[in-house]
Image 1 (cartoon, helix red, strand yellow):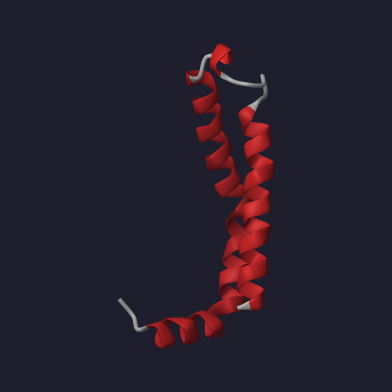
Image 2 (tube, helix red, strand yellow):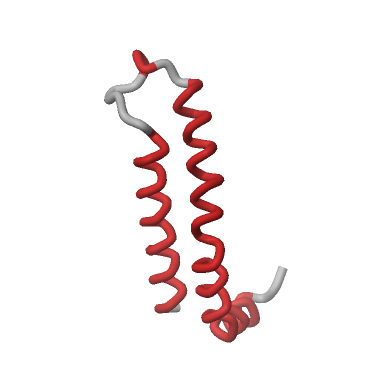
Length: 77
């Protein structure tokens, strides 16, 4: 485990590369995430859900929001 000051310095030095990595891989990660949500949607009987929704579509939007929050955090770090 790196000391906090060293880890923080490395993050600041590589911030642009981290953001580029997220941008370059976002669609692939969303694809994997949506596939897992589809599997979850198929496993859960609709009677157990409060609202009948397609979880993958909602999940994709949530995941995009997470990426947006991560980008904002890294930019402001």
